[in-house]
Image (cartoon, rainbow, N blue to C red):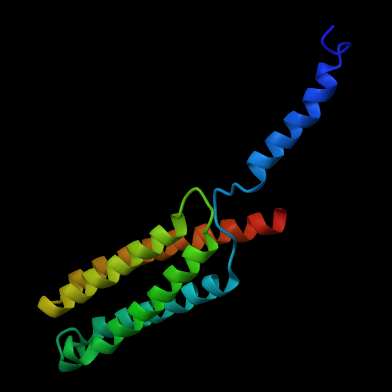
Length: 153
């Protein structure tokens, strides 16, 4: 009876337009960014190399904070760029997961720097290495999911 009256014929196209309009512009995750992916890998390599050298030199003048200030300035600039790129890639999304991960990574570098200013030990370096590994692992997994999603879309 509803179909015979023609209401359904009129309502279905309108409903389809409304549903399409509501879902087209909504994204829950950002777009995959190859530069962001490559830069993250480079930063991880740089960090791992730095921490390995720091472990060897922790009790020597080469391991002092004064002799390593440039590392912290370098990574602050690198992470700042990653945050900017992730914010752009996540514009218009419901969540800013990747940006949050890079902000957390920035906090880790701040924690390492503060520890280095006070009294850095092999135990602290090892603990920080584990934290960096987990953080970079989460970011890499997320970027790989975005990359996979792009290929299947």
